[in-house]
Image 1 (cartoon, rainbow, N blue to C red):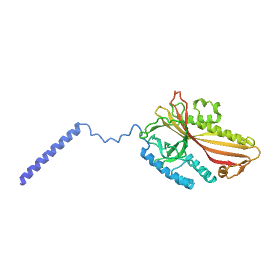
Image 2: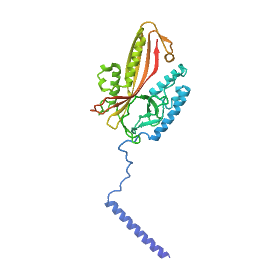
Image 3: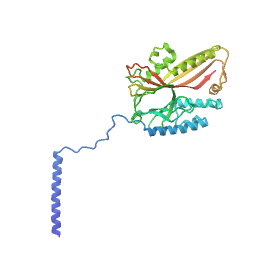
Image 4: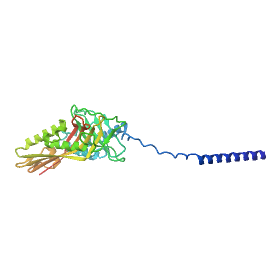
Length: 336
């Protein structure tokens, strides 16, 4: 038995030696074994959120809005509302209290008709939600949702009312996402930043603006002009009215449309100043609550947050820039 075991052991050592020699020969003559490759990076960034994630965000927003609106307390909104949306809602709570609930906060449905999700792996991120029609039968809203960093929640940054009869341009399916565009992106009739800046000039100068021919007639401009005329008529016997429109260029966000154009979102700050040359102006309950004054004898200044959503056609198109949605909301009042 011991001799058989010894023979087997010798044969095993011989086979091992041959195998080792063969491996050494292969290693010497062949190509080196490939190193493991890193995971491939997708050529196109993914959609920033899935549809299910977006709908969960909207559900959370609905809960937060309901709590804030019930208490008329802006502190209850902090986890899901920011930017001009928070400033507007805060002023609306003041208005609701000042009018004993006769003028409640703007209805903001969170059910979606359409989602426009960015195709990006970067932050900050913005997605747009075209809502269902509110229960009060007003126009659907476009909710502007922003996430500042990977650690932050999505917040409602702003909202705008969809213009009557407006058709939203086609965008990519939310499962794949729409490419984000820089504020100075070319290939468009106007860069996204220029669309906001030049529209502000149209509001200020009307048809006399050099940019007026680039923009289609729209409900927002009509509303601004009508309100300005109303103020002028109301104070013509005691003073004058002046209004300025300042583009907030750091708020501009743009996403590509299927036809090579862009949906552009941005904010204007409108300041309306009523200068009193004689007598006084008596303030309504909301203005009195926001300013802390019941009347003024020198001036009255309104500050408005304007959230605008444009469609900018591709360069060379015959179409005009179109205002898709807009919101003009009083956020502060001061005077003396």
